[in-house]
Length: 206
Image 1 (cartoon, rainbow, N blue to C red):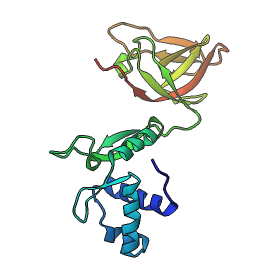
Image 2 (cartoon, rainbow, N blue to C red; image 1 turned 90 degrees about the vertical axis):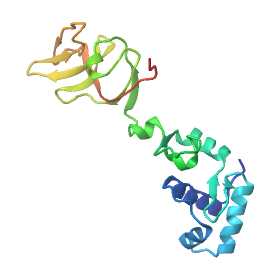
Image 3 (cartoon, one colour; image 1 turned 180 degrees about the horizontal axis):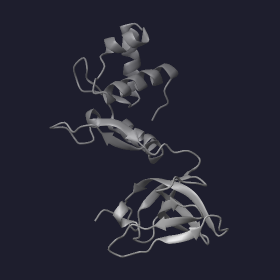
Image 4 (cartoon, rainbow, N blue to C red; image 1 turned 135 degrees about the vertical axis):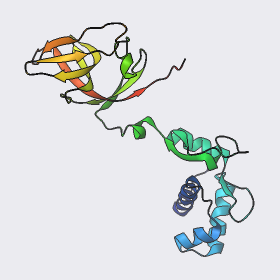
């Protein structure tokens, strides 16, 4: 899409924010917000339409984002989060889109956060299934009773970690399978806590 001037970008961002709050702005409101003459706002909005960012649905609150720009937002800002679904409108209509969410934003991603694919069914009673992705915040320690990722002889395992005086208990969560709790020495050189599980993502819903 055609590049925007600084002022055009500011106007567009204001319109996007208003639409996300389900309040399509009038040109008078845009003018009041930016302390501009209505003629200036009319011209700026006309440029945004000409460049393919906006379309006019009619009426003094008829400004809407173009399909092309909605798709561009989805690519750069993540998947649309629907606040509601209005009758008679396409489900992904701008009126229904509350915001756009990326995994980074959803889990407050920082440099010390990573994904780990789960292998096995030892944590199914905690809602963590084989093939899921757990979101892990790197940490050398986790609170006793929290779910963590532990490195055992270079193999990562996801378990509930219970810290005891001289040992650490790695508790599975699969009563049906009858997996046993594993106990390891707290300072065993072949054992290392690498992080705390802060989320779980399932990509295969059956």
